[in-house]
Amino acid sequence: MPSSTPISPLFSPVYLGTHPHRIVVTPRSIPESVKSSEFCECLVESMMNTVSSIINYRFEVQDAAVNAISKGFDGVEISACEGSALEQVILTAESDEHAADFINDFLSPVVSVVKAERIGIRFSPFSPTLVTGSKNLVSRFKAVLSRIHTTFPTLAFVHVFGGKNIGELELPSTADSLESFRSIFCEMSASDIASPAPTLFVSSNDYTPESATATASSTSGLIAFTAGSVPNPDIVAKIQNGSKLEQDDFTSKRMLDIERIFRTGKEFVFEWTPEESKRVNRAMDDVDDYLSQFDPALSYEGTDKKIVWRKSCWFACHGLGQPFLQTEEEIARFDGDLKDGLSGLRALQQGKGLRSSLEYLKLLLDNSLVDTSRALGIQDQMILQCSVRYRIIKYTAHRGDLGGIGLHPDGNLLSALITNGPGLSVFDMDGTHREPGFNGTILMGGSTLYRWSNGTYLPTFHNVNTTKDQKKISIVAFFNLPDMETIPRDPDAFGSSAGFFHDIKHIKEDDKSPKGELAPLWDIIIDKHKLVLPAH
Image (cartoon, rainbow, N blue to C red; front, side):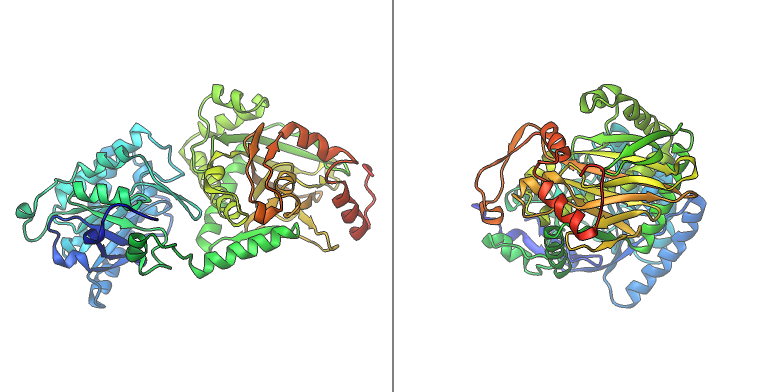
């Protein structure tokens, strides 16, 4: 990233946790020990169901902190970030005061065995699963940080991630968003800094060289560069010189795999960690409980007109990483299917448990959609302009017979699917037929992707089968380009410099036509898989 502002005096690397964050140190005097410290991260990963159980877990963190110091680390950074058990307790506390009390009780045993100036803690109050800009959440985190500042005035640092990560895409929050937290910690000049030093405020917010310099020049805190620091140990010099940042090997390989797989019309699966798998299963149980109260409706879908009982409702947002639509008016403007949309709205209002489960599933879906889009050459700005609708579905067989959804490709740009049982089948252009399973987030290309890419990426032909005794829960995110707009595309990648005009209604009609753009692909599928379909 080129910069016209000289920033070399401000950069100094600091390792916080297991990831080497790159820090801009302000011109004001910062304790020398902080400028080149290595902190061991204590990430509380386990999802605890009660406050009492996580309070017991604090002693495990206490032991981990002592162990880290004994092994030579300069300090310990405790993560209370997105998805952590600490964040969950903060968010579900009965009041701001209770949340602050909890953090106080959690940190006390740690600082009793490790000096406070060797302890840091990290928060992400703007994570995608939270309702951005909510006054209640700002108040909640301000109460927590204020208590830390009052009770532990010599804590090494409080690190607030001001942006939000959606997959590999890091988005900054507004400049004012961080100031409400930064202002809690006194701005001090060099002569004011005592020994031991007061708590430093560390912020990370997808900084550019210009925004980092401006912030560093006006505060006494630290600035962290998080995204991209792992594969770029020389990130400071690269930012100064305007050099391109490298991707880590895992991300680079995955992007190449996605691009290669989508050229053949196959699906790509983002595998879950064991902890993610546990959380998905719990979330799907919550979805099942909610949908169980619905009356089923018959569904006839796909070219072979399979029949299935289906209980369903939908949610939507204005873009990936944005909160669910919150009002009836927003839902009505988004889609004409108001009945199912209002059922989704009631689910969000049902209680913290169900809403939290839906937001977690949304986070996994959003992350996979961002990473897939980037691998396929969709620019970040366009990714953020795309719309997304999420549908939760409970399938049961009709009259005890085999059923499901017939063979079809989805009509949108991309589909991301989470399901808790077998039944999804993919039909490849080479005649291969398989079930992707249900231990990861499944990504499939749609007919809009096929058209936008000028035939480079093939749509994923698939169906869903249900057995007579099966009850199956799924949540699918339908991701699509802005409607009735001309979408740019890379002529080097797709062989056409002309923009793609996206007309959803026309695409849906053309997908059903035996003489439409998909007709040659259908001919291949039918021939390779020896199918006989009513539509042909």
